Image (cartoon, rainbow, N blue to C red; front, side, top):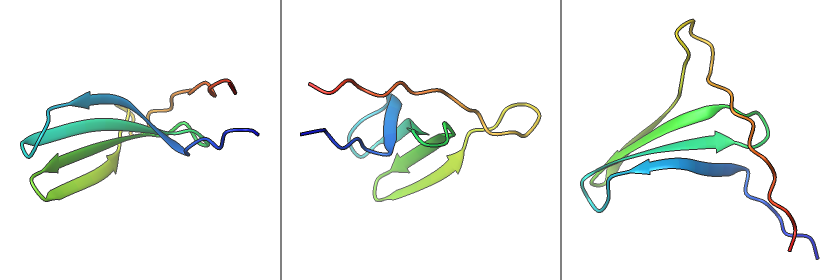
Length: 66
């Protein structure tokens, strides 16, 4: 049976616990990168942008079926 892949994949993580945590997530369908920052019980999500204001796009290879 084929494995269903998650739409978003975490490509970077920094920090831990209830301190400040920063992660970068990539949408597998669009390639758009998002920055997630959490501190305690609060957090925020925003797209990462290039200098010209366009979103950062990354190609994420699909994982192979086992």
